Amino acid sequence: MKRHSVVRVAAIVAATFLAAGTLTACSAGASDDGGAKTLRVTLANHVWTDTIKSKLPEFEAATGLTVELSQYGEDQLSDQYNVKLNAGTDEIDVMMYRPLQEGKLFAKNGYLADLSDDVEANADWDWSDFQSGPVESTTYDGNVVGVPIITEQEVLYYRKDLLAKAGLEVPTTMEELEAAAKAIKEQNPGVAGFVARTGKSAAVTQFSSFLYSFGGDFIDEDGNSAIASPEAKEAYAFYGGLIRDYGPENVSTDMSWPEAMAIFTQGQAGLYTEADSLYKNATDPETSKVSDTVGFAPMPAGPGGSVAYNVPSWALGINAESAYSAEAWSFIEWATSAKLTLEVQQDGVPGARQSVWEDPEGTSTYPADLAAAIATSTKNGVGHDRPRVIKVPEAREIVGDPIVIAITGGDSDAAADAASDAFQGILDDE
Image (cartoon, rainbow, N blue to C red; front, side, top):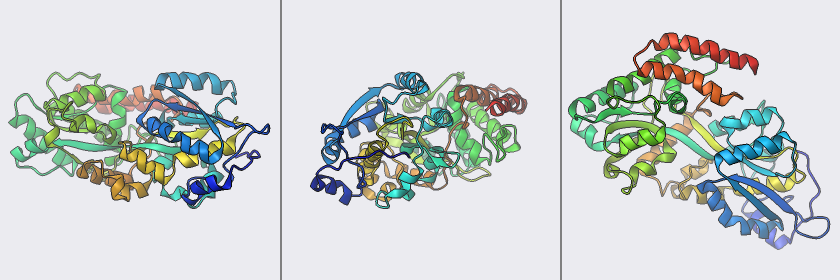
């Protein structure tokens, strides 16, 4: 990364952060006219942002920097980036972005600075502590362009009471998952054995863990479409069949997580696969009728093993046009330190540092079985839950079509063949 000269703040203040491994020695600065240098940070509306905002005075005191914070909802944030970054603005220094939604586009267009040297510069900060799945998705053409701050893994939500009634253990394989779904639906009129997202685009992310566990992926090692592979076709048929045969009666094919979660939390389904980050919807008595009987487990294993996604839903990057890249890096280094990652995770935001997950304090606010399920996902999790392309919305619509066809009882193999041809067209264009 291009570096700009910086003037150090009082050593006694900065030393406090240096000793904690939070900031590197070159990170603090002041403007040439003697006033505080302003660092412009753009963040999304999120619980992570709320925690970081409360800690900003500590960062400003240690560095002598003034943080000018801009905060937006997801759609507003995308609009801001689309306009400003495309115009080559230098009015953004640190930027919170979605690696799997716009990361490839931003990296390919040169919007994100190369952080490869920075992440290796401070041994105490420890880049090796970040999980491999999220790191994979914040790396482009071998260069690190972002630091993951919020992660998600897919896990199995289940009703302990319904499994006990059926005399079944928690499913650990796809075969056991199907058998449990069948038993629950047969024994409990009006209750679905299994529920999950069904919308063409919305279902793609949660279907991905089924795809990986059946040994498939969206794109093969040569960069070509893999969604018509035997493994992918088997995964499409299995996911769709679970919902078609054991899902809610007259299930719609436009459900995203709010609709699927509502079915589960209102006691109308026994098994549900979903992102771990949404778990409080199921465990909070204010929102869930089954809060006292919900359990969590790793994704059941398919022919390819238990392979769930482990993705960074958000990351921090630096605008390549920033005039204050050194100062911007100091902010990222501070915000993603082990100390702050622990504090944010205790507030319910899953972080990307492995050491925090291995720290009992890091999982103290999580249900024990959920923490154990997440630990399984982070070991061999895949760093993407959708195709890693520039045209993400278009790709999701295409690769999600066979899911809907399978749910409605159509020929999902033929649908996968057709979708693969269309998806290959996107890959060829990119």
